[in-house]
Length: 365
Image 1: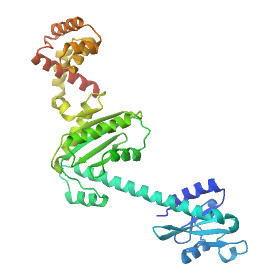
Image 2 (image 1 turned 90 degrees about the horizontal axis):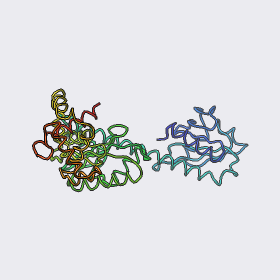
Image 3 (image 1 turned 45 degrees about the horizontal axis):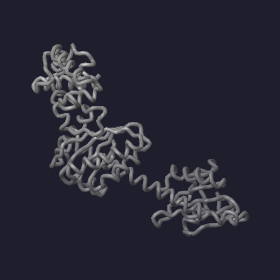
Image 4 (image 1 turned 60 degrees about the horizontal axis):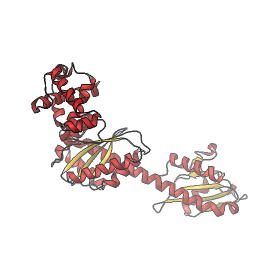
């Protein structure tokens, strides 16, 4: 537990604050970190005595010859989980440094405890990510998954649902983001981890879809209020752990094909676009060019607003900030150029598909 890296950091921090020479010795009495680098890797017999007795050792100016490799000062045992794991030495006259030596010992032990907690959290987080990686395989090793879940105290139960979260520049670091999400989704109902530097997975367990959406909206509100851009794609609810990978694939598609301005995108909203995306690229490009190729940007924008407003002329005119008569003129122009009337259902379906393909092509470029 007391590594050279941790010991060096402790020495650095305490030296800055106390302006005293600090040494840290390991469980064998060897100096592993010191304000005086020349002393590192040397034996410290005063520390060996502390390790043997379990008690502090005060070394005065007349004593160093008794303790080879030691200087006047106080040497105190470092205790972690009721076990002595090393010794911290503070150089100076024992009577002068006695009043703050116990404080230094306490701070040292607190730093080691904090390092241990951080290490445990990182270990548990890595196990969660390994479990998720295993669940993404076509053939999963259920025994391995259960062993890892047992180690981190997590139990996955149906129904399952996966969300993928895309984070913009944020004031939160990785651990803070995980903690924030876990605070909203109880650890027993969600497993969260990073897929890449700015993308996370969230696997929910034993939660109805309505509750999942409520909690995701809370996450969006919490992060956007702090100036963090966020988009979330949600896959379908599945009942078997072998289908979790399908929910994940759907969540990724929702992010990829959903609107850039939309914070929460469900798979059902973009399912038709997924079907289009799986068609031959040349075929759908030809279809899009044939339908929209002769339309101006203004008329394409008009169609986008028309479909976003569910084919409602009045609402579309409001969203475009134009008069209703101007909108009707544009509709006639679209019919004239394309041969399709946006106000007829079958024609509107064709035009909507072409608009979707156009958006997909822009994202892919």
